[in-house]
Amino acid sequence: MTGKNRENYNKNYIAYVNSFDPPTQHFKNCFRAFMVGGLICCIGQFFRGLYEHALGLSGDELASAVSITLIFLGTLLTGLGVYDRIGRNAGAGSIVPITGFANSVASPAIEFKTEGLVYGLAAKMFVVAGPIIVYGVLAGTIVGIIYLFL
Image (cartoon, rainbow, N blue to C red):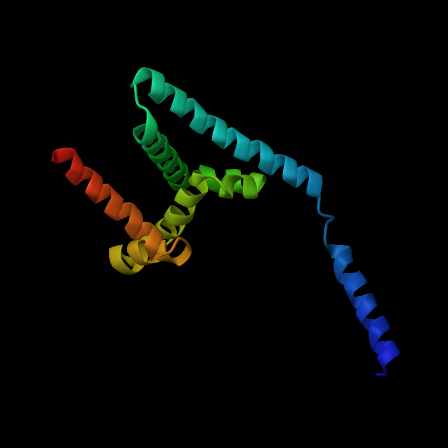
């Protein structure tokens, strides 16, 4: 096959493959990501206001309480299978906030729990999020509990 024939063949093949691909709807995808990401942030802001006024929290305590709440909600929704459906429709809007972090840790652990606690649940948490994040959260929780009792 000569160079010009090969070039035509490649163009025809690419056109053939692209005919099966639905066109990407960039504006629609960006709008969904913006709306869902914004909604997650609004929920976080709601909890911030609630904790600030109802519980009198401020500063680092307030930020920690909101972060813990959002991580809990992200993990809970992942466990119930709701966060995956949100992510399918929202794209990057569900990945970027802190709830996306919770989802990235919980999803592999839930998926492989049948393989046991060590090789399934614990090991698969490291696949996406990495050991530094998991150990950091675990160490922070232990230090916080110790600090609470001192």
